[in-house]
Length: 288
Image (cartoon, rainbow, N blue to C red):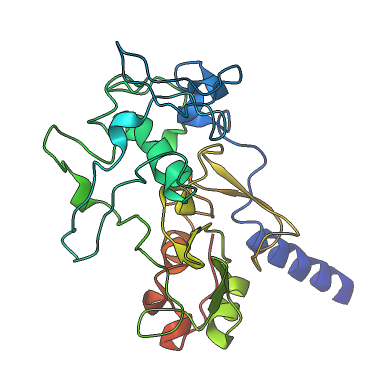
C-alpha cells in the first residue's frame, strides 16, 4: 500500500509539473512568418550583398550586410522620434544600418514589415493566410507598430522601445539584480527566486553597457508558438516544451484552462519587477 501511495504521489507531481509542456508545436514553428510561403527568404536574402545607391531608386547601400537582410529599410531611419503618453521616449531606429547599435536588427529590421506605414513595398499584407493556432482566435489582421498615415500613427499606444528604454536594476521599479555588458544578472534574493519560479527569457539589447528594450527583447521572430526550456535556460521550470504565443520568448498561454494560470503575468514581470509576487513579499510559483 505504501508503494502504491508513493507511486500515486509521484504521478500527481509529475502531471502538475507537465502542465505547460506540449508534445509538438501546433503549426510550423515559423508560423505567421512563413510569409505566404516565402519562408526564411522573406527576410533573409542568401545571395544578396550590399548594393549602391542608384540614381533612379533609393536603395539601402548596406542591404544584405546585417544577417543577409533583404529589405530596403532606408525610409525607416530616423522616422519615429517622439515621447509616449507615459513620458518615455519611443525612439527612431538608428540613422544607418552600420551604426552597430541593437536597434538596427532589433527594431529597424522588424519595422521593415511591421511599421504598417512606411514600408509600403514590403511583403506585408492586410491579412494572414498562414496556418496559426486556433487559440489565436478568428482575427487575421497582422500587428503593426505604426497603423496609419500620420507621422507617428499608433506608435504611442505601443510598448516603448529604443536605446533610452533601459531595463533597471534596483530602485523603485527594478529587480534586486545587477547588469553588466547589457546582461541582467538575477542574483538578488527576490530576483533569483523569480528565476526559480519562472525564469529570465528576455534578450535585451546592449547599449552603453546597459540592457535596453528592442522588439527582439521579448520576441523571437523565428519561433512562434513554442519555448524549449533546457539545461542552458535561465529558468527553474521543469525541462520541456512550453506553449507560447505571438513569438514571445517565454511561456505565455492566455488560453490555458488551468485554474490560477499566471504565466502571461510572469512573462511581463521579467522586466516589470514592481508588479511581481517576489518583490511584493510573495513567492507564488508559475502555474502553466
